[in-house]
Length: 238
Image (cartoon, rainbow, N blue to C red; front, side, top):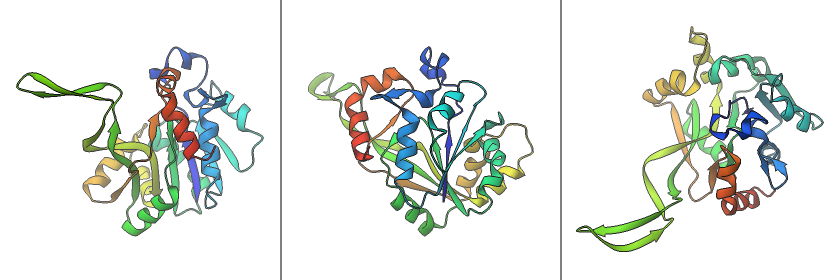
């Protein structure tokens, strides 16, 4: 199995920092975010190659400069044709693969990829998306009865009404075929392909349970959640 890391996002939520370096290069304890993702993927023996897609002619060149001496990493220039278009752009690298991992670079999580893979196979779905149904809130909450606060709950863990989709997928070749059938210049994987597959019952969900996850959208978010970030890194074994 190969793993594809999408690291070509504009990083608009991370401005002004991302005017100078790509989101994937946000520093965490002296190492860039993407290095944690790469090393975590490497920790799984079934991941035989990592393909990184980014704008290597622009700020993404920093990613290549940092990782280019590591083995079994392929760097592919962003096609500027959307997340779905990028997958078609690397189709030749996936020609012998029946399935692959897709990891958006700003996701930091010690997800159990072994169990996710087993679930994906057992469900015989076209795609499997990491989800969570519980979230630790960043603010305080109150128990209110008849307009009176009875109790405060500081940063509680709440059960979500809807499952939250995280940026870690396992995809089968059927998804690539669906992408290829789209006759448009830019193809958004979620809206143009996965939305339809969900209506057909072809997408499974892998709930990460109590495993921590964070959207590493900016240095500010990471600094604000430093304890969670450090816990995730420990869980990743890094």
